[in-house]
Amino acid sequence: MHIPDGFLDTRTWATMTVVSGGALAIAVRRTKTASSEQRIPLMGVMSAFIFAAQMLNFPVAAGTSGHFVGGVLAALILGPATGLLMMTAVLVVQCFVFQDGGVTALGANIANMGIIGSSLSYFVYSFLRHGLRLLAGERTAALSAAVVAGWLSTVASAAACAAELAVSGTVPLRAALPAMLGVHAVIGIGEGVITALVVSFLMKVRPDLLQVEKV
Amino acid sequence: MKKYMLVFGLMAVMFLMIMCLPFSSRCPDGLERVAHDKGFERKEQAGRHWRSPLADYAFPCVRNKPVSTICAGAVGTLVVAGVAGYLGFLLRRKQG
Image (cartoon, rainbow over all chains, first blue to last red; front, side):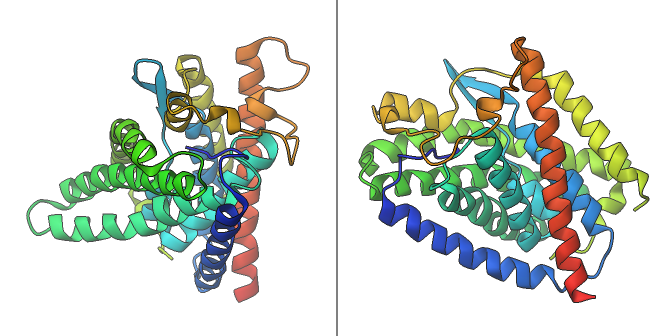
């Protein structure tokens, strides 16, 4: 759901750039307080994983595909502020090196997949995991929370994207919103399942990576 | 984290990518599909403000498309790891 150049009007992309810039400033200030050295290589490897995974499109319906975004995964391992920085690193490289997502739309893409898809979705994940822990075991709670938060993050990003397109006058909201939500409700299942699979894999192989300081 | 984790992790990411890329769908993604169905895809102005060196994940001079995509993906994986890792390093350093 990388918005290309031309879909957003100047007022909308400028606003989204300011919003993302502000959120990034907060994220930078917060991550500066992190003390663990272990976070640096993990940020690099996880961002690289997210970039590579985003290149792999899975079919969702006739003639449509979707791909993993990874916002919830980034944040649940390294925290909501670091998750935003990681998604920003991925989106900046995709935009400037691969022409995936427009230069003017970069702020909007960071807002949709970073602020909403990673930082805010982290709080959904965290809330769900703590709630589910009262009903089920640690592992079940974490995996179910990952599935639901992954799905919600995709759907919420899609809704934000539809709203930005509508405000720009590109397409009316009543046309864009149902269409974007419909497709991404299916793509979101993939997002949730992949997030849970990676968490489950890490629980088995490197449980220590899930205990890293989250900022 | 031991130092080789970085190298090992990146190798694992590359391996996964190369194994999975042949199965990747080439269909339009969610937003592209909606843009097509709702008739606003012609508004796209890709490359108007900036010409990306590896646009559309194609590596220049490599004719074979799958190989070209894998080369572009490998470069991207390293660049992203570098950017994100350096960002982490910068933010860590200023505190210390």
